[in-house]
Amino acid sequence: MELSKRLQAVADMVTKGNAVADVGCDHGYVSIYLMQQKICPHVIAMDVNQGPLLRAKEHIAQYCMTDYIETRLSDGVTALNIGEADTLICAGMGGRLTMRILEQGKDVTSAMKEWILQPQSEIQCVREYIRERGFVICDEKMIYEEGKYYPIMKVSLSGGPVNSTIAEIDKAENSADLLHRELADKFGPILLQRKDAVLYDFLLEQQAQYEAILNALQQAVEQDKKQETDNTTDRRWRRMTEVEEELKSIRLAIGGIL
Image 1 (cartoon, rainbow, N blue to C red):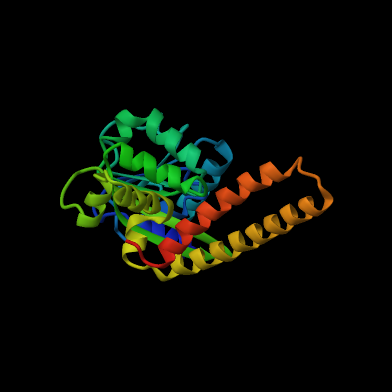
Image 2 (cartoon, rainbow, N blue to C red):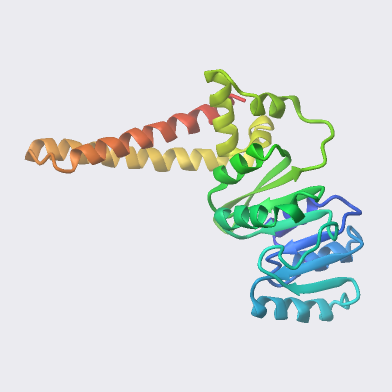
């Protein structure tokens, strides 16, 4: 089984020897890979839709993994019992859905050792949710594939040594510490600390995009002034302030504030 770069990064974060629940398993490729490579003793592949689950079953049978990979129709982890899995994989879904799965099934998900998360949106909110729950992002990776950037994070629920920088971020109290925490939530504490090359490319692209937006807004405001049409200027000023704040965060991250 050959995985895409994104799915390979997800699979690589699973701790060897852990039983896995792959929520939103889609075609079942990650589940198959984990068993092929003898990373996991057992995998439960789950999906809320019958179609993807049937495709996963077909692929599992094709690779002769039916005795090792169990499939379950499940909305989130509703079909999973406490203690059946050590690792939860939630990859390729929106951040809001990821958080809903974690929260609605918290009795099950909180009893696990680790989560491997790859949210497609609202990534800052997911990191904030993890921090506010008292859990720790212990590893991160950013992948660039087919024109898109994918952050992947490994969350530790089982305690153990905590990176000192992450511990300081979690205990932020003064304004400087709070700024560090905000940047960590936005861009990833470990990615920033490692000065990740893919994150750096992402930040440069974001900076260019926001600079272009800011330039367009400034030109529009000047045009409004010339034409004495102020009805949209206030809204544009508010948007300019928002863009300037985003640019400030991006530039601080590029400068390696963490």
